[in-house]
Amino acid sequence: MEIGLQIAFAIQLAVFGLAHLFRPRPLVQFYGVLASKGEAGVIFIALLSLTTGSFLVAFHNVWTGIPIILTVFGWAQLVKGTAYLLFPAFGLRQFARVTPERTDLFRLPGIPLLGMSAMLAWHVMLASGSPMPS
Image (cartoon, rainbow, N blue to C red; front, side, top):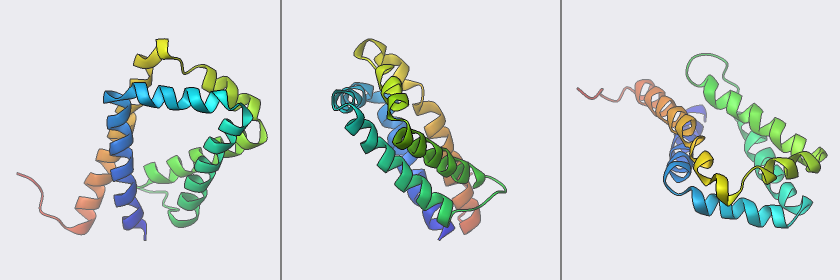
């Protein structure tokens, strides 16, 4: 189960990272739509974060080596979802930071997302015994 989650999240984090780097404008627009919904928009992100976080915390409790990245990510999502759900005004303040004028800043999270993806993919490759590229 853990390797399966690592593969799934290596893929997801790679796509999210690439989207942040190369297509930040639609992501900023999406946050704008959520912000326009007020607390309901915050609740939407809270539910996504809580679902992702609780799934990882329940099924990927690995605290050693490279896989710790995914466990910490899961706990971070759980904390974020909880904070947004219990304190939606906090989430609205975070949404307010995402503006069309600051689209280029939205590219920055793409770098750590791609880094996490690459590290997880590397670990999965090593764990599965796949031949190393020469």
